[in-house]
Amino acid sequence: MKTFRKLLLTLLLIPVLLLGGCGFPGLGGSGNDGTVRIASQTSTESQIMANIIAELINHELGYKTTLVNNLGSGTVVHQAMIRNDADISATRYTGTDITGTLGMNPVKSPSKAMTIVKREFKKRYDQTWYPSYGFSDTYAFMVTQEEAKKDNLNNISDLKKVASQYNAGVDSSWMNRKGDGYSDFTKAYGFDFKRVYPMQIGLVYDAVEANRMQTVLGYSTDGRIRSYNLKILKDDKKFFP
Image (cartoon, rainbow, N blue to C red):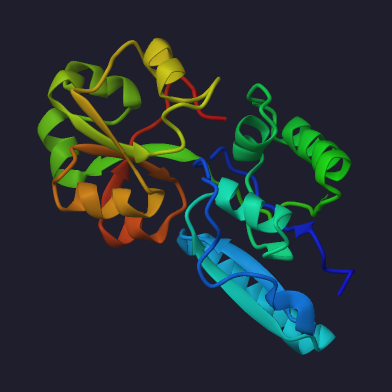
């Protein structure tokens, strides 16, 4: 079991949430019987990767596995690892962990970001990051096709002309992030939205699809973008790493 203790399986992303002092429902030392506990977030890709990892461990190594599902953010997953409530994190994101977990300034270069998290997580937490899965994810503003057509939206900069009328739903952990959070976003793009609603990242897609929000900030690879036929707005100022 020590082979699996405190491992981090990672993919590149930019995208976190603050954890309070409460415990995690359904957790609490379940690994004492030799079961490998795999933590995943609420996103589609994290759920898929957690199940793939579980199957690989079951069939190739013969260990029992259990999934610790639907943790609200990378920070919650990190705390689960620190508290010994999980052994493997199915997906971790360099950008999120650099600014959120490590409290460092954002790093635009993917290779440099990977070098930093590998070094710092080993030094601070005795955790091992593995190479990227080979695909990347990032934050992206998106709208419905109808909204895009009505207001002629293609780039994030196009939102400036309608921002004063738009309600935006965003990942709650992104709001106060230093370096690449909402405050820095408004400086880079030169506008504020009418109102900004922080919410769990998994809820933003339903919110915009149901027209409760005019635009939302989600993950660029989430399957619901295609399912709901949402349009990703190009980050024309290259704000998100």
